[in-house]
Length: 144
Length: 144
DNA sequence: CTTGCTCCTCTAGTCGCTAGAGGAGCTAGG
DNA sequence: CCTAGCTCCTCTAGCGACTAGAGGAGCAAG
Image 1 (cartoon, rainbow over the protein chains, first blue to last red):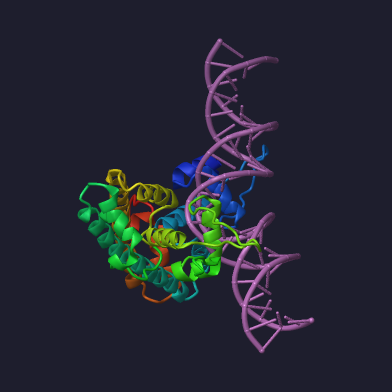
Image 2 (image 1 turned 90 degrees about the vertical axis):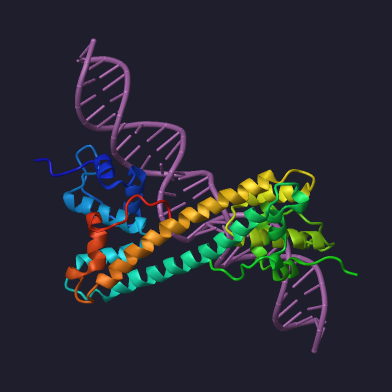
């Protein structure tokens, strides 16, 4: 049995790119694995699982710091999962706010491109709305 | 008549922060204004309008490069507005994709927090779904 | 004339990577 | 045994769009 994997294998398995794996090690998100005689990283099955966890969480838009906490929680199964729950809830709220903000934006952009008569810039609705905030229904949106 | 404004006044008027205005000058988005004897930037009404345009476009999520193009277009009112239209349309598509992706994400997160029984980490749905991609309905989403 | 605000420039940091240089190991074929 | 070509190593620098802070100078009011 080999039992170990190169960084390339880990990358293929997890879908996380090789430099990104090294980066995760650097910032302490993934433990530094043992090395072969030649100095190459030798990952175990546990590491692959951790990487998959990280990748999945990143796909769902969790920030590195949140993932750090979630990983710590995962390592202590007897703890209350209130913290994990809170992180997920928090993120859900963030996502919902972002959707709301983007939806308002979509309306604004749709109004812009619909109003554009495809003539000259002087009478272009797109430019007009951008130039004059008063023309627009979008006010005080959060970050898109 | 003064006719000119300090960077602080420009910031208050436009809602763009002082260092950000200087940054816009540095990257060539806003022309470098004349200076007073004491070396301070003296903006004119035209600059304030340009800043407002930039701010509004940023709020709508346009990238700096797109704004650069839009500003050039604004400066030549006789040109066809096809380019401005294309930029806005492009951005609308981006926003729509982002909304779709975030909506899928919201479902996933909602499932996570609803499934969580608020017990121990060992049986936490949040951690579980993160650990096992197979458990999840989210596949191949674009960047959130 | 001093206090305190704003302004100036400059450098470095943020986040989450990504790209590239320059070199070493490892494996297969000739 | 040698070489070709792959992967791996470390290191530094770059991305976008700012943000933060140091250290200093101008400027207006009391």
